[in-house]
Image (cartoon, rainbow, N blue to C red; front, side, top):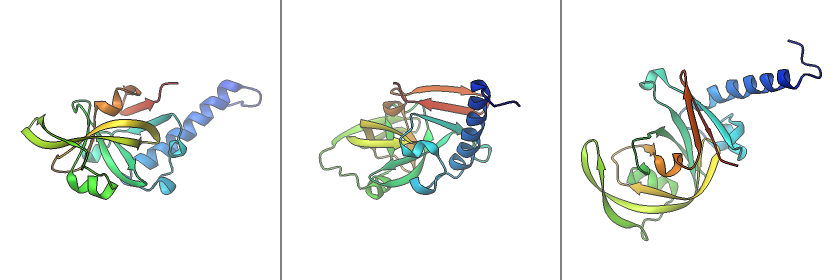
Length: 165
């Protein structure tokens, strides 16, 4: 492909590089920001995720709070970002100021604590003041309290998130 002086060719090559880097980063599941290989970890406004065929073709992304990172499942059926009490503790989330409540899930009602996390980074996209529910049994669900604030598109096993400008 001729690239000299051809902006479209340069853009295509850059996009291919980002996709290759993103594929290795997001297939890892849990990673530290420095070792993720994700160009979005520096605060970029776009992330590309790939479905994981070994995990039910779901989409997973690194979730970072207070410098700690774990893997979360993209879940458009979850009203908020939700996590287990063990992960909240690992992230250093203080639940003292949270409000006790109940959350409805596919498995029935759960007692949860509702808090607002001042800063959360998901796949390198940072958002402030994100509502989070603590009380699910395991893991992290990346729900609509985060997803409704980003542009999301899906096609052929690829999910793209970008922060609005």
